[in-house]
Length: 48
Image (tube, rainbow, N blue to C red):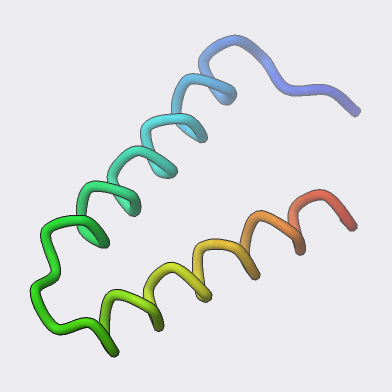
């Protein structure tokens, strides 16, 4: 089943928010952890 335009836009907003949060992180270990979590979430989405 595909996404509607609204669902896709919401998904893109989620990704942008996560990226912004990651880039604003000053602690390098926390930044790396946030990047890893985002990558894992995106990979899981592809596998669903």
